[in-house]
Image 1 (cartoon, rainbow, N blue to C red):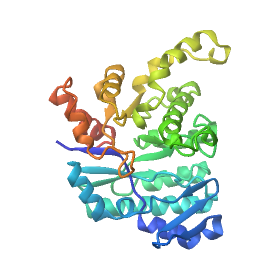
Image 2 (cartoon, helix red, strand yellow):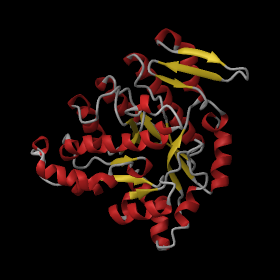
Image 3 (cartoon, one colour):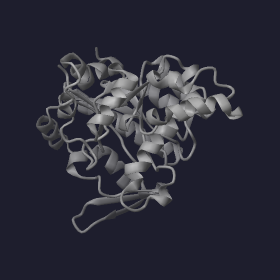
Image 4 (spheres, rainbow, N blue to C red):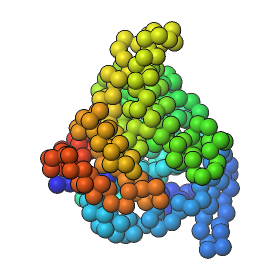
Length: 330
């Protein structure tokens, strides 16, 4: 049984070196702390503690995976991604990341696959990069922010990218960046606890209400953090669609789209995870950990195996089978 973690972040050394070398002329402030560790401040975002061996070093990552009984990571770039950069530099950073994922896959084909990042701030460049990245070994999907520099994902300028992803059979995996309302969530790590799940809900709703899921019926989209607020506020959206003029264009209730999405397992609550499985179906849930963040599951396989209301076949589907189908590996 393949144990596949779909939510695992990676900062390739090549990507970090490119920012250190070329970032200052593209608006990046580069500093080092007392230990010599790099810190980057991009326009609108600061990247400080994540440039550590678990994020950057493949042997360290393999040890983490082995300890967690995880066979394979789908490597993805996390915040700040590349959307903050001038278009040409963003495209270069995307290429460097995607090439690094392909290199990791070629060296360890049974341990790593890649989730391509795209310069979505320049959709024409994003289309070109997804076409290029799709030909790289080991690239199995696309990783995308829940908004692009404040623009929701239903904006028509992004539709050519969705068209290409659908055509190339590349699922889109979403991830929060710069959560809405972050200025009110500066304390207590609320930007992560609350902001990230809110972002997933906004992104999913924008794709539904904005017509993206209808326009691209074969496009697969995975929502992080178990869908965030989207599954649990679906009743409000269903009711609102029947009484609000802003939603008169909707031909079916938002709840009918629940199974158009896939959801990772990151809830930090067995009860909520079981509720999600019952709501959307076992076949729409894939294992994720958020490795190696401090908010991650350190043993994501154990999280699924302790759900005793699931059969062994259902557990195996969530641990790896569903993701293998979604990522066209089975």
